[in-house]
Length: 635
Image (cartoon, rainbow, N blue to C red):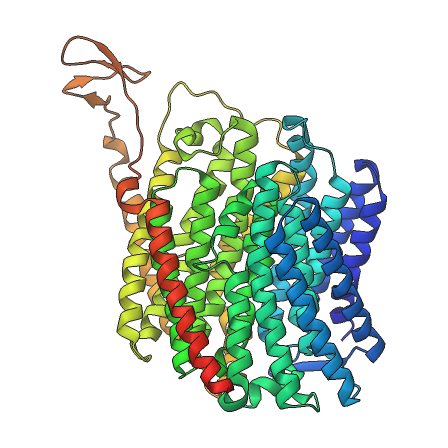
């Protein structure tokens, strides 16, 4: 299975090349070729992977594992140096503490004298992740070519470090492939730490005080997760000196009694990486980075690594109190992050809180962990990755053309940027409207929660959270399609790379919706069957639901065709008086007034500080309970 090592190594080679080339003359073809080959290799796995069960290939030597340990120490020294440079003493303490745990683990592992033979593996879940990383990640790299050129025109004070920027993008992809294909947990940890390093450097790209502050916030929170991950490695080295349980599949098959403690510790690492409450602050702060970085973090790399590892350990968490509480952390995050999104007018912040909410829902499904919920969780990962990458890149394009990312400034965008508006409209529809997949996934999750332990509590959370979701997406959608008769069209001067990537992502959003039954039948259901010994017929049921929704959705536009010969365009009335074409009217005191449209944000009810503090306190308490229960099991 050549594509597995190829996908881990090749993006790293492309990254090294991009670090050497100084200008766009060579950077452009290297990025295009690198992204195309990475995407093609990811796609080829569809035809080379076995139909059921994991397929492993030996891929490592002891020397390679030792090299990774040396690289982890080098990363720790580098991060500690930056911590000293910027006087971030908490970061230095956390880095040194984690490094100390790794040294302890390495000594314990070396003392056993057992040499390990790490494997790379692929199953349907890692295949889903590989397609997301390879195709969407590659498209974001191509989009970045045009975006970063414009970015430096508009931010002349930001030093042009595009060599390191594109180096980090491809290194990120390489680390993600390593993470999802590795069966040996110390390798998973190594790639896990590389993603932390890449996100830290990309968030701080501009070098402003705000970006540096937010980069260290992300670093601190992710190292907290790294410490928990290192604790899991030490625990496994203690209970099994032979090292057999350091292999992911052996550990998961060993059952609750042995695997529960490391599963909870690694799930905590996943919670920090996927930015659930109380750790969501780092992802919201990461919005200071250039938009392609936000798209990459949200759709195909950083946060997806967090939910991937929790879904991977879902069979261990199923039916346990620890899994239930982790699911509750996800549920509370879904509900409160959806509410906070209502109070936001910054489009990137809306997308950030929407991502936090959806990741919370995925973790809720994986934490409770029945086979039907795992099916829904994987479906949510797929649809969220595609729609969210499209929306971030659309917002980045709009921001460069109109000079704002505020939703209130997007009035009449359908007139000013019609093609981008349609793409953005499809992306937003993909997040909450039928027949797109996110709605189907949420419906499937509700169905599955009904039969789960304490399921009605999760159903209530999902119902209220889903209603809030409808509100903030509808507000944004209304702004885009509201007509602004005097608006000037500003859709020119968008680079070819941007058009290509946005068009492909829009097509993928629609295509994946249509191909949803095939995706379920060939990727999700075989994985669920292999892990749980049973699968779900939710896909068949939901096909029926999806068709019904589609028919109902089409009734309104098609019914208008029946009356097309009788249509009339009526001028707008304001206060009982007709408005002029430029939307002005005579007020009640004879004063000429202009019609203005704006949304409600309900900051007094859904304000960021108020709900964030309450949600953080609640989730922190839940995590403390899980920690206490896990400590009891470990002792």
